[in-house]
Length: 314
Image 1 (spheres, helix red, strand yellow):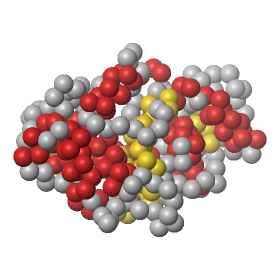
Image 2 (cartoon, one colour):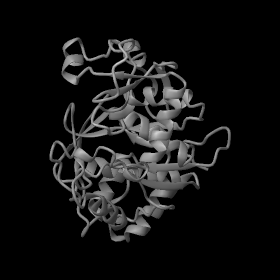
Image 3 (cartoon, one colour):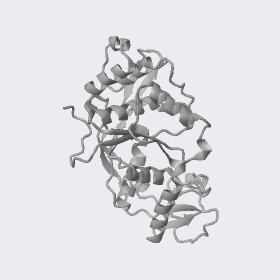
């Protein structure tokens, strides 16, 4: 039996891939999809897909369907119905109302620009100003600051204490629910036990752990994969115009994703079907094979097999 992210309390393994529909899947997002899929399947668990479309200002028309079609082309089939955050506003508002009833939420008029000007960390300026709800953001009074946690890949994680203690937004002034709220509410609702995702979310994880404590709910175990970067500190992303992975010829990019995750496939598996490649990967996968690094630099086109992984950045 492979040693992977097995919960010692024998909680049913339920993992998830949660892309935002701001564009097509690229090689970096494929790594997160394949890594989370393999960890779930190697542990005889369920693998769910959630479309994180709560920030409607970033949603690209048709991107949700394109993402799902791409996952299917790569043989990454989900086990339950796809969840869309834009269909869950009532559930998010119910949690906000519950927190308000506990006197843990207050209104805030501070802008990002103002917070950035004082160092980037909110200092509680509006906590006692009792602004009206009109045009106000809502902040949660931090009760369970989390500055340290154990990651299944990256080890012990330390987060700046000031950031950990920050009263963070749970609803924006434009009425949109904040990511930090909805991701936790969704993980609770879907019974997610394990989250395998990119290392760019190491810091937000500490905040999410604090919210699980606030809501008195069990938190998932977290495993953060190395990021695929074009150059150090410059991750492959939709914002950085990373090229979309091919739906017509998925095997080369899948092959390179398996290499990126440390599985060391032989070139001969490219002669297999997508389904057979994934069967081999599930049998071969062990979490300890994944490089314990924050970034891996990628060169050339990941839609062509044998993409070069130039450097590993700790």
